[in-house]
Amino acid sequence: MNRSIPLVLAVALFMEQMDSTVIATALPAIAADVNTSPISLKLALTAYLVSLAIFIPISGWMADRFGARRIFAIAIGVFLAGSIACAVSGSLIEFVAARFLQGMGGAMMTPVGRLVLLRSTEKSQLVSAMAWLTIPALVGPMVGPPVGGFLTTFLSWHWIFLINIPIGLAGIVFAIKILPDDGIRVRDKVDWTGFLLSGTATSGIVFGLSVISLPVLPPVWGLAITGIGILSLIAYLRHARAHPKPLLDPKIFRNRTFSLSLLGSSLFRVGSGAVPFLLPLMLQLGFGMSPFQSGMITFISAAGAILMKFAIKRILSLGGFRFTLLVAAAGSALSIAVNGFFTPATPITLILLILFVSGLVRSMFFTAVNALTFSEISPEEAAQASSITSASQQVSIAIGVALAGGIVEVVTRLNGGVLGLNAFHTAFFAVAALTSVAILPFLVLPPDAGDAVSGRALGRAGPRAASPVRS
Image (cartoon, rainbow, N blue to C red; front, side, top):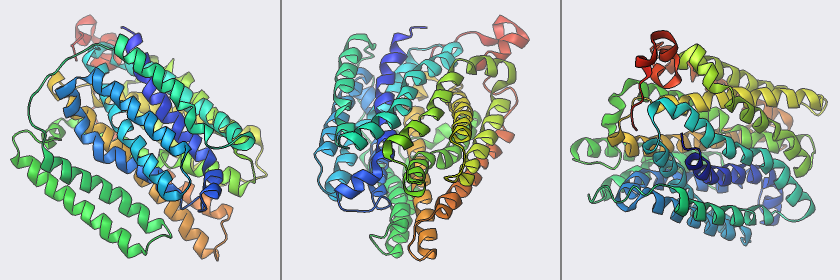
């Protein structure tokens, strides 16, 4: 396996992951500087995710039409432009707009990068390739909180966006020099009606849920926007069934392994996506820690995630995808719930230990489910599968952030406007319960699903059971 390709692609994931964890750590400081509240500032997080949800569906078509390598490099450039815009923002509106621009770049980076990986990796090497793709990216969450906390505490939050510049420039250079050029694959016109409907559906649902929990507009506005998103989704499904080449083809869901994997991972991300938003806020606003102190605690989960990457292939070869995902989902839900018992009196060593274990099981889940999702996808379906998977992932994370912020806001109102620890504890319990629901799709997953990819089939039936298939 050519490790240079996933390592280059990981530059994009590194920037995105570090950027999200840095912002979560610096939310209180940014909110104070732009004259808003930390809870209201989650609109900026949602704006980024909404942008991802709108533009991810078209990423597969653009990669096939103009070449994946070219689109990947351009996407990094757009993300850098958004980072600079974030650094010079002076109001909530400017910051939200800059994050939306960042999302336009991020919408192309991850799905197109995954597409390059799928097309250059044999099925039998998919688990290893996914692990190598994710290991450097996990350095982002590890260095993000302490670096972001240090810059915010001792310098200024503006610098947390400027550090993307050298990373992004290096990513553009290496992408042009190292990534394979797959050229122009299709000349079909883009499904603009599908793009409009899918964008309205995803952005309406995500933004509507966020507005419900924000003190900016009455809740009825959020309900109305969410309703528009749901209606647009129904309209898109009808359109896709009639269109000869829809932007996102629902026929791919006939693949049972793909469907169950996508459903399970989406439910899981609703819970896990809320944790990076909740935990830094609880440590700073509930425990009275500085951004730097908060970052030095939350980074430990990324260390556990990195360690798991070196063991996941062996775990999958022994237990298979179904058993591994059931254990990882249950363990992750439990570790999230434990966060709801943290208080300023909880020993720091105990918090670090729990967060480290949380990183282990979360990494186990993500690597396994990412490989399983694409284990039975043909080369012709790769672009569609990558776009659909990326879109569902970001929508799930956005829902998790909106839900967590909404719970914190509701409990705060019930407390007479006082933001207390019980608001964060309630939110952790709720998202943990949602994460546990991710177990259900994997209960009906065939025990031998993905065995040819995990290597389990090789151990049971000999070399023929795991013969490589080009993806």
